[in-house]
Image 1: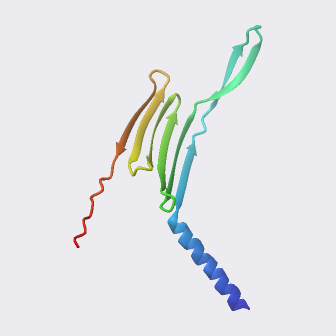
Image 2: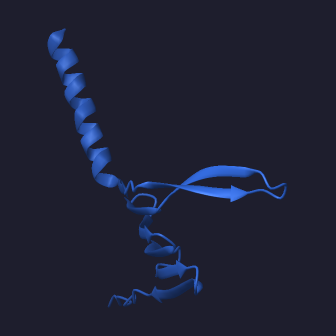
Image 3: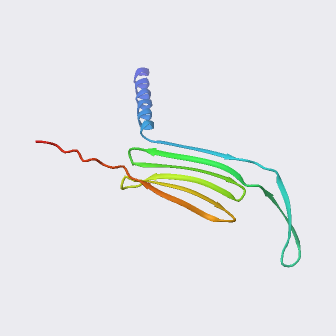
Length: 128
C-alpha cells in the first residue's frame, strides 16, 4: 500500500514539474517608504484640515510566458515623485511583438513610443 501511495505521489510531482515547465510567470515589487510630511490646508469654509504626504516612489516588473496559450508579456515600471517611466511588450495574435516605452510627468504629460517587430516567416518549399 505504501508503494502505491509513493508511486501516486511521485506521479503527481512529475505532472507538476511538467506543467510548471510549460508556463512561467513572475513579479517583483519594490516600494520605497519615505518620510511623511504633514500638510495643512483650508476648506472653502476656512476650516483647517491636515493630511500626510509621502514622496511616491516604487518599482515593479512582471512577466508571463505560456507557450501553450501563446500568452507572452512583460512590463517594467519605475516611479519617483511625479515622474513615471516604463516599458512593456506583448506578443500579438498575428505573431508580431508590440514594444511600448512610455514616460509621464506633470510638465510634459504622458508619452508613449510604440513599435512592432515582425518575425519573418520563410516559406519552406517541398519538392516532390
